[in-house]
Image (cartoon, rainbow, N blue to C red; front, side, top):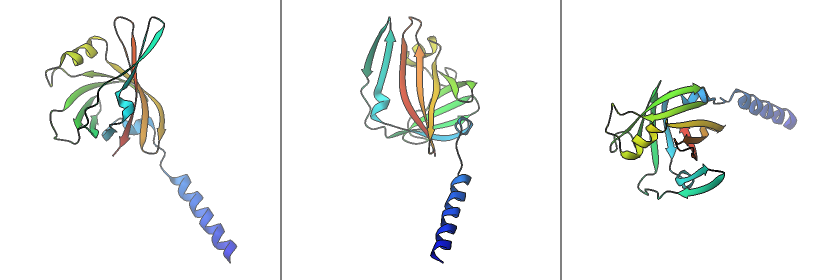
Length: 159
């Protein structure tokens, strides 16, 4: 009797596991997501002229996570929740299901010098590195007009 119960429990668990939803890159194209603010998000790698350097940007400790709302080719980012502060508007150009280019939308808001510079350098290319649980891990890379590659590792999760 105990063996039968154990067998039924094992088969049930296998069945539940095989029916579990496996997320793909397509699951991160449209919807509401969050980017947790982590220590890694403040680190950048800069490659230029056969040298590699790391840079750490000072973090804004008031930001706990970014909320990201995506609809087709538009992305809106909010600090710590929708409706908090001034949103950032971005244009998404999908290269494939797992890779896209982000530029800032100057038609929605006045761009800071940093955001203008990102746009002038062809934006930021975001590429999936892995999907784990409800989160997509990525590498964001910008190649400047001077030939530098600036990259950052990040994570975006489904709400």
